[in-house]
Image (cartoon, rainbow, N blue to C red; front, side, top):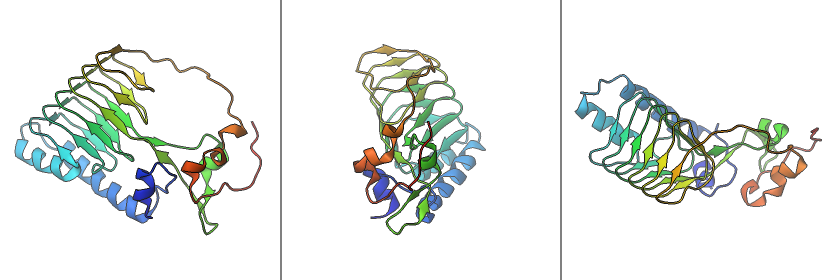
Length: 217
């Protein structure tokens, strides 16, 4: 199983693997090229969008600049509008429906890193070699939604049809259809403990192992 397949299975993968770095480099270069165009360079932009993305529906528009991590893991439907500074870190798939409007500085992220600091630094693969690892969860956005400025959509979130997401919101959980949702508050939730170790997530850990050592809370 290659690293991209692990990624799509929701298991730990190595973002520094050569096969993934090649995909990201291509997407980063194409995103930068798109961002250097003018908004009336419609034919050039349309061609670049189709090179970057898995799907870019008819009538959709990205103001630019844009930042796609993999690009090919994102599908965008028809008649969507994306204002300045769209960022999509699409390690896992990002699926966006039709007729949505996204304000400036919309950010959609899918990767998740281990909670414990030593596990963030490195874990062991099946051969005992240390690797920097993370995992990812897909994001799904329905149809006819409006996102205010500076909205961040976090890994694993599904947003239903006809939703309005208020400016500055950080969306950490699913939003049902026909909802107005808003808010952002960074606060201490709980202490990080050994219970957060990847050893307690065997379905994600897959063939990797935690490097032996003590975690000091």
